[in-house]
Amino acid sequence: MSGGALPGQAPGAVPATRTVLSGWGGTAPSAAQVVRVTSAAEVDAVMAAAVASDRRILARGLGRSYGDAALCAGGVILDTTGLDTVLEADLRTGWVRAGSGVSLDTLMKTLLPRGWFVPVSPGTRFVTVGGAVAADVHGKNHHVDGSFCSHLDRLSLATPVGRRDVGPEKDPELFWATAGGMGLTGIIVDATVRLLSVETTQMVVDTERSDDLDDCMARMSARDDEYRYSVAWIDCLARGRHLGRAVITRGDHAGVDDLPVGRRARPLDFDTPRRPPVAVTPPSGLLNPLTVAAFNEAWFRKAPRRRRGHLESIASFFHPLDAVEGWNRLYGRRGFVQYQCVVPTHAGDAVRRIVEHVSDARAASFLAVLKRFGPGDPGPLSFPMAGWTLALDLPVGAARLGPLLDSLDDLVVGAGGRLYLAKDGRMRPETFEAMYPGLAQWRAVRQKVDPDAVIVSDLARRLGVIDAPGRRAPTTGSGGR
Image (cartoon, rainbow, N blue to C red):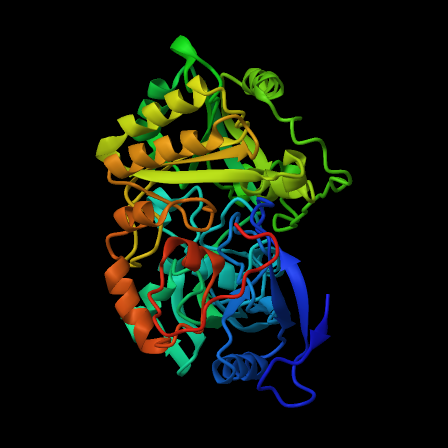
């Protein structure tokens, strides 16, 4: 690593350190100058220096995007985790203005003891507010509450042409281009989020097993609207009449009266137990069809055939993997791909065909999650649409993984669906353009705030997201694609 100021910065400016980074999946590393900022003024200074020196720049939070969305080979990575202050809050009406580096974990630990919860939570608490906006994250409640950016009142956005305050009512085009825009419209400085009132930190949970995928989807279609939160774990290695057997989990926030008498005195205590971190990266072949099939069989059998009204903590219900620090290392040194797609409601049969392809290929995905989405928001690059979303974790190095994923892409495009950019690290440009018909609209909005393509990511380069003739060719980073 090497340190120093960026070109165009005055002496004593925010120092930069050359660092090799990767996404959460551990693939496609690249090197950049990393600058950690702790104030809005420092964000503006680094942005101005990047513009003046013709240097590409990108914000990065806690690095939980899986592929290359938070990488900028040869450029400047602006580490926003120092923007970690809760700036304002109204705990009477339920809103908070937080720096973009504040994590959802911090918000929960701060707000839950006061009776407020984030409106949308993905599968990890360890994502920043800025990252949640950039990916327009969704959770188990999308069919009821939509995605994260549907609950924002405003954003402060540092762009190459100056600071912008935007929201659904003020400059809505730029606001919705930023929602799910993968950080490519500006550096998110802070955001104002509307909160959800809760009485306890417990969930009332119903669990049931389904014998196959068709049964699972029928049960979810019939009853999901009765619950705020719903998700199904799918066994992608089961075959024949048990193809896609599942464990369906649904729930809602518990009221004080739902708790045992002995726990009602402290209903808002929030405990987040952590297990020891994964200290040693196991061999890449540890997760194979045999070991994953054994895990899936045990996981399915231990789930109750039907259980109603079980109490579970918020941490356990929403973020079970957060209990194991560094769980991504379990996939070995080659890392893994998370493949997440959505298809419209009327194209639900595509989900079955995807599961059939994965099962036939004996692809070792022990984490396969199915959810229902409600209508998407207006963001041209926002991922959700009304329909079904399936997420698969697949170790890199599996035989014929590339051709398998290409075949799944074809199924998704044919169904009118799309892939989640926050998870992607290998999609082709032509596939991306077919999946996101609002791309031209998004480019036109972005062009107004970044006409010289100062803000760039490895994902944007790979997919051809940004058309920027005349910019200096990108510097190749360590590791490449």
